[in-house]
Amino acid sequence: MKVVKKCLKDNNGQKKIFGIDYTDNEQIKVLIYLFIGGTAALIEWGCFYGLNHWLLINYLLATALAFAFSTLCHYVLGNIFVFNSGARYERKKELSLVFLVSTIGLLFNLLLMGLFVGFFAWNAMAAKVAASAIVVVWNYLSRKKWIF
Image (cartoon, rainbow, N blue to C red; front, side, top):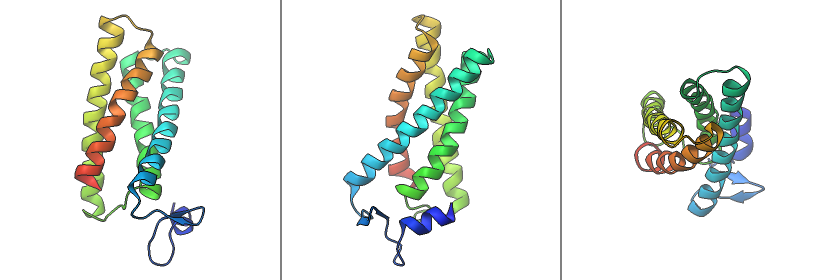
């Protein structure tokens, strides 16, 4: 991860991609965040599908496991490309806050999955995609406002 961070930052600590400094450009950061979120969503959906359909794990447990793995991937990529890790809080506190926000996001995800699959009888994969789309808003706003 340090090698990737070094390639994306110059000696002044500015974030650059394709030679363009986007350290203070919120529009580019949001676009990159959405790309990273999309990547994390694909990871989450792939994990969910594999756990639920191939390993026959209950959809709620599969949701929690897939969410946890994709959150880890999202955290690493978000720190490299979007947020300034350690800028507001020391890393231990920052990581604790990320896990708190992610746990709340997971609870939203599980609630939505329970409603969509259990109450409305949606297909589990369609419910997973819909729940993820809703929870991504929580994730971005809470990380931006309270953590980074």
